[in-house]
Length: 98
Image 1 (cartoon, rainbow, N blue to C red):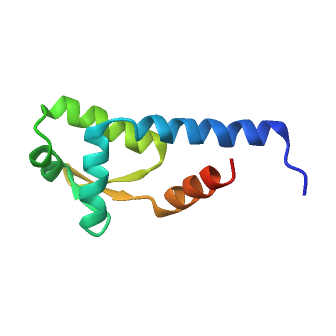
Image 2: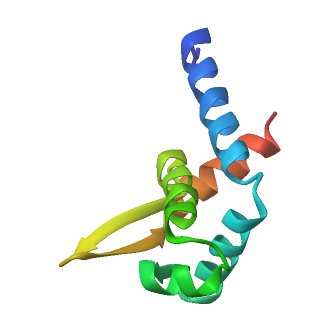
């Protein structure tokens, strides 16, 4: 099966976006906590986990959501986040096949 150059570029762009999202220690801390907590974290818990102002935490979470590494779920006025295992698995596979 032939894959077009355009599809390869898009795949590499997604790898780049995820890699950039992983390049911050605070995002790594969030992901590490989520991995230990059944792949989930509540927004209020994220604020308690990191010693950062709420706008900074929102920025880090936004980067992780935009990269596809985590999913965002609104429950009432609060947001919960969960790991996107499919994106993780595809990211690892792409890195192994570079």
